[in-house]
Image (cartoon, rainbow over all chains, first blue to last red; front, side):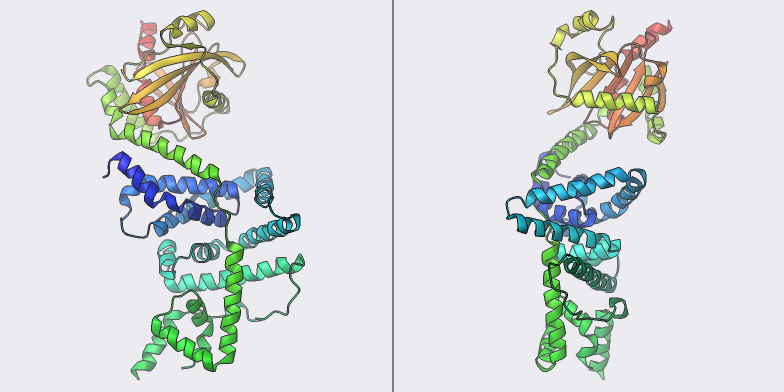
Length: 219
Length: 273
């Protein structure tokens, strides 16, 4: 147990430096700025309460991301669903808020650029909406936060193999959705589709590759 | 074994920097010979870069950090109160209040399940809102009692046994169209100071404040409610004066532990005699 003042200083030094990163993850997980803010606040407050249980010398950012992810899965999804049922108007307001925030942030750029950025950014959020939660979480932890497969596996409590296949499929679905939005809005020319195979039909399995290699090596 | 068969797995792990050094070397050698795998990996690399660029989130707004700092301050104060075992320290052993409050504590632990009635929810919401408004107090310190009798109703401001609870002052307000007085207290625990608000409302209807979870302590019935995450304790006396206690920075348990040491208990017993 640390003295209260030391605890706060230590928490600020080790945990609060990740606030921007945690907000980024929360923003991509919740897909709206207001929920992202609440999620970061709840998760960091929780982390502060359980600071004594954080193992010093382990990866603090991964520990915090685990709390963000768990809080999101346990509470925000449930809350969001009940809110959607109860109050469609609120959901509409969220959408408006999101647009306003984006418009605000892009004000300093040229109008064309701002319009493009805003639309692309909205497309990203919309494409993320279409992903199953598990896929989205894997993509956010890897491609937004840069965590390793092993760290993601620990957070999501699944084997590394599962992380890899979620990540693979999540990325393919996301890339396809983004390409579709871009094409529909004419940002990019409609290029011939490179890959025709459904990502579901592909097997992503590093373990069995390694196992097979080992078998061949011993022969 | 041909690496081509596993190129999806290998290129993904390669681009995520998850291959062992030997696996990486082997793949890189293979790419020199295999145009098809090289093309595959290059395409995957481009897609991944585009994806990661698209996913870069906006930075946290300044409000996030400010809000967070406030929340941590509140948590520090809460922890300080709990850590000093405020609950047990407040109650003098052997008093009727202590016995009743101990029983109460158990009850509170398992209670608090029913949602408050609509009426109490409206009142507590308004009280919580009033409490956070930064309006100046109309009277401060020792003259608060006489101000209250003169401007509000023939009633004394609630006093607490606890020496660390000091009446700061009051201002007039209205709750649901009823005249009300907002009393501000300062609760000092060690170096921490927590604000406590009591709102007194005249001519309350029975159902305005009697909802939510009811707890009896002696012959006093208190009602507990949660208003926007903030604990609220209410009580209506025989003169239809309603008392609403709340604090932004206390848990229900902490708030109750303070309210049960108020002289409302004594007043209720006098009424009984």
